[in-house]
Amino acid sequence: MGSGGERREAERSRWTGSWLGGVRSAGVDLGYPGERLGLPEKGPGSVAGYGRRLVALLVDLLLAAVVAAFLARTFEWSGQIRSWTSTGVFALEVWLLTGLLGMSIGKRLCGIRVARLDGRPVGLGWSLVRTFLLLLIVPALLWDRDSRGLHDRAANTVVINSV
Image 1 (cartoon, rainbow, N blue to C red):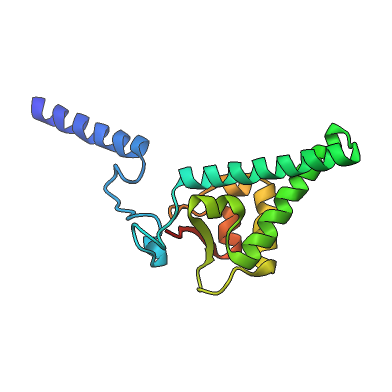
Image 2 (image 1 turned 90 degrees about the vertical axis):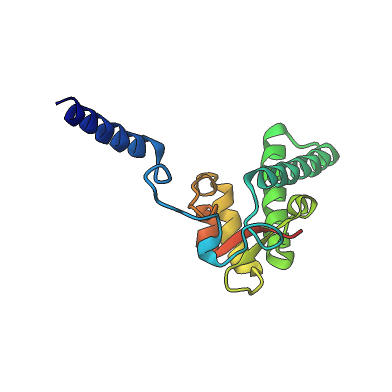
């Protein structure tokens, strides 16, 4: 009688453990980020980590804020106009540099870049889509198991290590 109760308890704890612990604790092997896309696990061409992406974003935002502050001081703009200018400078920098070079200034400094999954350059059109969704913030915060935000999925891109 004791063994049956112990077995039910073990099954119950296993069920709740897999449910609360996510798919990895249920024994599902997801592989590494980018494996389904045919990317290497480490090194150049592998999916960039969250830390480098965050630092690159902060560098780009800081750069845009400095440019906007300079313009606001030169043209004596109010704080609200400076805020919108900062957003516009950020969007313009990310759109143009990602579309033409595959990386913004922050991404270049962090050793990461944006690449299309088909190997072609990102281009200004897909970069515009990606930048617009990035400005909405929420799509960039929703990730899949390959560490791609919705803005990357919409543009068929992935952020990879360049070094």
